Length: 591
Image (cartoon, rainbow, N blue to C red; front, side, top):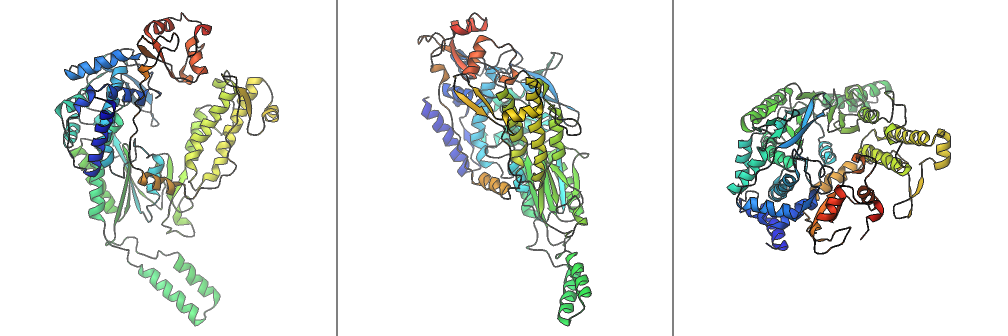
């Protein structure tokens, strides 16, 4: 199959599923016979942080070569391909519990990414607009932008699915896939990936009876395919349960307004008029509990979802019960009764995807001047951000800046670069929040933490650091090519809220048209970087990201850092020599 034919087939599947959401796709498995599918898959994952993470057999994408592709195509043709068990590790969650992560080996990474590419062409065009997790041009910010438009919300249902990834039922997932895919060989391949098993922390093999391994390339997409049933269920609820064009008028407000206008016309004393005006303003203009008016809103990010209801609490309780039954009966998932809360929007705030959602301009809107303000405001979680800074060693428990010990051996430009990463990561996506003005405190901690790190590194005072480098800590240095460069902290000059921040994100996500770009650049067509022999087949030599590299660096890693490369082609002879450290740095010739 030629390169253009593979891309044409993928584009054909995407186009047909876009125009016909119920289209049944056939002959997908034969795509795995194409060499170009593995080249596209490799180019897609080669620069990920997990590309060099080894599986249970100790292999990763390090050493990717033509032989891998040949073996995979051969095993696909006779259906002898069997994914190896994953290596697992446990990482702590915010709740104090542990989350299991799985790491496939190098060949399995390529197959899983190929599966993801094919499934994305089929399902991405038909996913609900209410789903925002692990999708192109969608993010936590696009989900919050959707929630911000829920004016007048009375009750929030904070959804929490217990162990969603671990409890996905394989048979149910296969049934969902068969609705859109008529290719049993492809279904069997997905089933093999799901049932590959894993080695636990005691290196004992465990079978996978349920669940979708977190850490694989295709697990987020498979989770979205599974939970798309939940999205469709909620879309039906929103359509069927919406009632009334507008709320009826509040009779108490109508009476107060009548008395106020009558007092104005009759020329009553100013104190009486002012009292009647205040009474009118402290009443809602409409009946918030009008039984003939109902609205339901919903948004999902991966396995977290939020529902906003304009109705009685009884309706919210019934909806929660219906959700629980649907998840249990249709998807074999459990809705956590403990964590799935029903919250009154005017009494308490709601934490969702790292943001705080609140009605009104203060913590409890019923105590403010306008207690029936229907606007839903987004606030940044300053306490959560301060906790992250404290965990990274940038401040004390009381928020006092401190130097970062682990960065003392790094060059000054890398210390400044790290500070910019923290600033951008914590503040850039908060610009639309109503309390963005509090970002000055976050910037102050980062700025002085980096300054104190430089002070400790050069054994000088903090005052001398700012005198030498300026307020923004401007560092001049030479890169690996001898070019003069400079870097400084990207400090905000203003913390005024960007009022249209979330609005623009929402418009961009809605206007986005899914048109995947496939990189067909063949890394195996290049010559060896060291010897340049055009007759030799090459393998791709990988290095880890700089923060994960052990010191001192090997000569090859030093060269790759100097030319800013994560992968480099080497022939078999040079690859073996580099692996055994036979080359010195001056022997590695650039080509």
